[in-house]
Image (cartoon, rainbow, N blue to C red):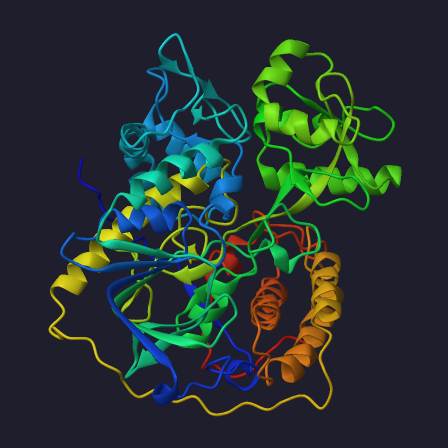
Length: 561
């Protein structure tokens, strides 16, 4: 089936200003082309998650394709996705139902044409995954459909019970490795995008922390995923440090809606341990949320109870934690069939068992955590960013699908749809590129300073993540946002000026770059909408704020006092 594209509905935008070019250097490392190794490819894909691999399958076999992954190919947000893919599959469901559910969740900021495009593509993209070897859960030859918060029908297609991303990525990785014209380079950190004459020309990358290489490409596709590691509490793996958001920004791409980080309501909370997502499907299967006193509280916040959208549930949990002065609330499934619970959620059962918890009988301690970045590179209906030569798909983008709050299980779907669109259009552009031969082009990258004493990367990283969680988390207000902006500016003025020359250093610089954009945007949006909740402006204000916020590196500063 053809992959459709949309002409996007215009929602007004406001450009956010900052001393961006003063605080953020164009390149993180000095580049000396005569002393660097060079690699040439037709299409460069940065990121090996679902969006990146799906993009690769659209590239013409006559073109050379190179996929760069920061870690092993299996290590991405896509792999860790538990719930599933939302798709109209049940004959009693309709495309219009899925569209409406997405629009309602999106806080009146979705692009209806994009929503319609993605929803209608879903069944074909799922069928494609099955064809390529994905084994979704079935019963008597039919796909098993689950339900999650904000959905009006059973339409969540899942695999391995609660490890959908793992199964999809297994099949996609195997299928991608069969493509002879596609080369995969793992453990390669993309430091920056190469630009010349206002166009993206490839990337600067380091293999296993070694000397930077210049990778020249006719077309580049950015599929680097999210930035949950900006926050202390997050469901994201350690690799999700916002590298794609940062490198696109430094290269001159317009970033949009950076204030909209979705916090997942239910993250396993065991003091001192790493955080683990407890999939929304648990509530979809009938789990209750109770507070520290055992009281089921969601009825006091929303008539949809535990199946309300994520932003509603996250705010309710935070409020209930404050009321009870407790560090968490609890999920309970003891009223459900124990055998079914353990069989339906085997991965969660295994994790919880490691802490002495039986998910079928014990209350599971949970609290919100940073989960999905809604904001990112602005892309059009062809998946093209505002920087010529750069395309993007997946969590690194702002497509208009999610608006101000992503509907559960629409993320893998977006990665599939826009990955296909980006791959096809980048391929066509590379085929029609008048420059038949790639060549080394001039790169302006002045030398950077060195610190008088070593920077404690871990200490600053922990301090920034704690600051973001405390001041730019689920609940926000002006004084705390202002404090965050000015504190991050101070870190930026010191840390970004240095040549840190390591993956840990580049990650910290990217975290700071993304954090400053997020905090500035959150401070500017004086209303509450979707995942962005201002306690000092608790109402949605469509008259003043039904608009996108855009950030561009060349703008100057203007921050509210």
